[in-house]
Image (tube, rainbow, N blue to C red):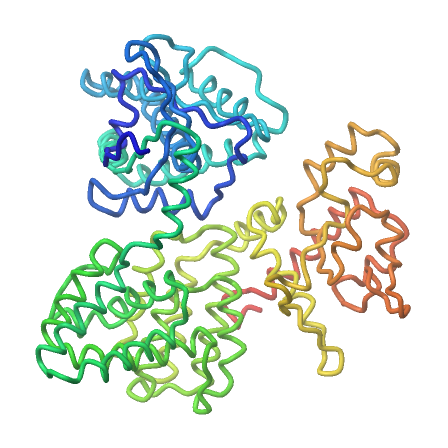
Length: 598
């Protein structure tokens, strides 16, 4: 069934001497990775040692002539291989931009990098053949043509708005950021290229589609391999059993209680163990000192802590786990009244990197002379910080753990009021300016970050609510939000004639152009509990929509956010721009970092 299973460095999968082509089946789903995945792959390669494991791919190899081009059908791992190809293209562009400064060795690397993307035997034979879904194939060729790797070709319409181009531009920006502060810019690029080339993937080759299907089933049925948390548990219980024979069941109960605090999500469990070390590094470094806990050194850290004091380690992480469950809103503590809603908002705005700071503050509350008001105001500050950060990417994600570790270092000797004041000063110093924040707010915000957009719209709507008019905009039903983002001018591909007439005086081409430039702007967005019922309906139908009981469920639903929509008789580009500007000013004021300036 399986022809081969090998762990290869990326450079070998893209071997310049090999006539290997990776073809993604035409019917396969389009390229779907987004910023979170691009960021994770880039940071994992950058921050970990050479040889970092990136996952696996499954290929069908039906070739028989070893002298001809070997075409492998890539049936699993297409997102990863496509992303790596785009990363190589971005590195190639960065080196090509400095071509006159390259020495002989670096020029050879530039040529070799080209051969990773096109075969040596023919410049037009690209090594990765993406699927045709959503113009993936055309967009990818356009990028290779743009950087001079293949001959010129037409750029598909709106290519810049699709994931292939956006991934490529993202990597360009990250590389530019990486080399900006370096004296040896070329050396930095070459060092990064070396890390990418030495990262590893397991390539599984099978002989047929039937074999591939059987392999998928067997992999799914056998479950996941042991995780880092499994290995830490095994080490801890084995150590405790050797110290106190016969009591392992008691400690296993304690361990399970810890995991019950954290929940079943493995990513959250792993994050807790990393954040625990990073939050309390100052006291733990006497046992084992590393600059920062990461995925790659997590087991090593806990082996040292367990060997030093297994029982004490379990007690301390269990106590921290209970506090972490409060941060996660899984449990409540009557002694911490007033911080539940701020913590829930911190979760909603994806502020998890700051949980290590909150864990430290909760664990040291008495010692640091903190009140619940101090804690609540700090969480509110973090919420405002993450609204701005998650939209502007300032400071970048890769810096956040070290940022909050630094905050802890600077407040450890402070007490009472001085602590939230210091945290505010530190966050203001590294956050994006109001101008940068507003620039992002004025753009296609929904496309930039739909989660932040939903949080912003919900916050604007909640501002005007009273106890009597309160609506839970975060209600979940059937594993999804009841209230979702609604595009006033629809975002769908086929614009209804009523909208072509209203927004573009019947000009379909103009309507499509307006959709490209304005559909994802803040002024064209609202929150609706009946999004599926509104969809592509005309503006008047959306505005006046009512349910069977005659209750308004359209733009006249009573939300302050929709007030101007409920009174409007039509919808135009000018109204989108005006509403965008009005909401931008409200959002800037609502999420001002320094309360004194609000």
